Length: 319
Ligand code: R5P
Image 1 (cartoon, rainbow, N blue to C red):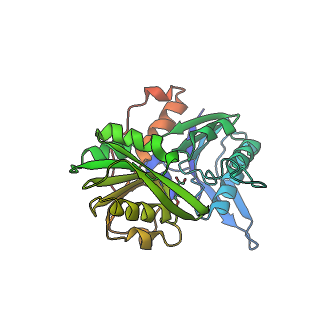
Image 2: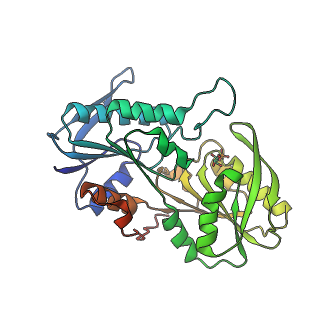
Image 3: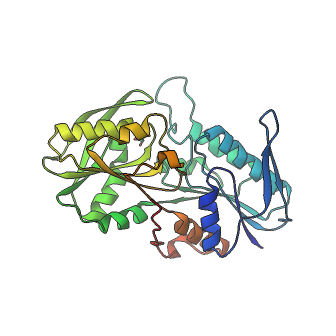
């Protein structure tokens, strides 16, 4: 069974880097739009019986990238591929993983259903908004984490009187992994959302006076959470030297302007979502997850357990 790496248009640079680490190149395909916006895909080579890895984050524009992924899966299934693996570094629609009010959808489950219906055999994601999303899949699902990559990087950056801050109770477990890795205290904030894109910090649980906080989140979307955190930390006496660590830099709408907040001095993130040049703010450091994905594909293609995987700590810093 040959191993082939393919990519949608969401993050081809990352996919190329993964393929290069595996000593190969991306599989040949044509991905184009008809004049009405419909997506058309053609796989150039025979893939009958092959082990296919499609790398595609379902990031902005989310619906386009999701549909591309589904159509790619369909094309491989109809071409007789042996096994179709969807490698989704950022799983879009994951923030609607439960109903928070009446008459709302559960989009994380809907997307899982769509992928299954399209014909995936396995899904691999990084740092899902909620780990329970794994259970939304009835096909094999591997949930990886970029925390070791980010944690090793942080551990190598001396920081006086640091505390790790979770912006809400939902992120406390994620933040605690960083706090434990760095051996520093954990502080948890309480956040309310009067509207899906507006965040208010209502309480800081823990002492942050004269500390240098490291705020940990899974996603930076509009940057509202981070800005609110920074304001609340300053009000509670923290030093105006706040680092932000987040796995998925969606950086939508006013995010860049909000990250320009003078007390936010560094933002450390990954390339699960590509950052165009206009979003590469000088404060931002991007660590690549290419090594992690390449090792994962190597293990899966050799039918080895992912727990045998060597931690890929070759963090190529991009910016
Ligand atoms: C929410 O629960 C997530 O963990 C992030 O805090 C949120 O998605 C960030 O969104 P924004 O940057 O728009 O505040």
